[in-house]
Length: 158
Image (cartoon, rainbow, N blue to C red; front, side, top):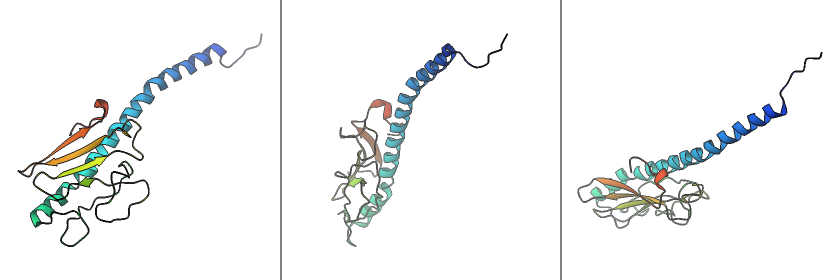
């Protein structure tokens, strides 16, 4: 009698089926995780401009631009922000396929900072006008809102 070692075809097919089932569950969850992290990242990037906008309002520099009497919020380019909607407001040359959050101008007590998704954002956020908006109230506090972002991708703090 010969002793055979190895796996039978049925055993290999069962392993492949189990891996397929795991992948079918894991891939959509991973896509949701990526989308949530992108929304949170843009929320943080655009929210970082709030302090600069406050300084500009307090100093009386109410027009966004590059001049010494204008407000430069210091926005950094992001590959998740739409290039067409997120052009630099201060004349800064941006790297290809990047955009910056847009600050309302002239700055008033109800200033807004808006970042519209595009470029390398997940497909669920592109082309639907998905954006993150920070809105300043007259008392100086800020609130965050998202528009056209699927509920499964909405960040907790916004």
